[in-house]
Image 1 (cartoon, one colour):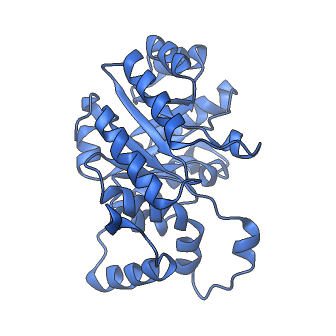
Image 2: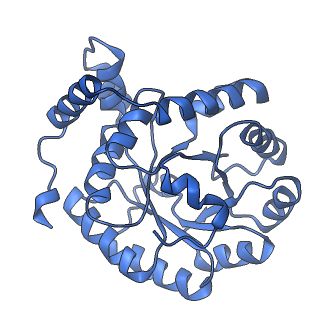
Image 3: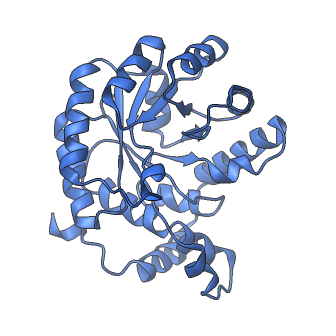
Length: 273
């Protein structure tokens, strides 16, 4: 593990990272400040905000937490580095998925190369598109590691229709299937690279523990966090996720969760590498 940000090294090493995502299209400063304050009051490791230099400067002046910005524009990320951001993520693909725009491995690699050229002394994270099959995700992850990318993030997407069409006997089944794509990618990628992996998309207090079992160094929180009505509630939710993520599962729980996860993901192509 090779991270520039010393403040985050222990959290990544101990697999206790919580990344609080304020909403990558969120330009409402008041909402970003509320989420930032909630993160400060909890066990959050760092915050992820919109790649806007004005907002980065303001948030940097009111918090000691590391700031991550996400974009697909390397020059936008570079400008944010001058404004005080600490981590730079090639991501925020959701806005493009809704427009049927998808990114290939070669496009991601080009963006990563240029970003690393522009920002040589700070941490770079790349979100691995869930639209790639698992084998291609692994290949891309290994290539990004060779480029000097410091952190990888997984994502996933499960349609509400698919969720509603399934019957669940318990919350564990529902949690795993809701986050199955992100967990599958986390498991496959973390076994293929030696850099930390953040698991994100549809994680809750159950699947956050599973993410760590699958090899994640931490989790990203977004949509479920926005449902909380106050700073105190948001802070309590972050801590709930933290304690769930860091709790020690006993052998029987690990056996049950692992079998259920494998049952849902029978064709992981990890052995192809």
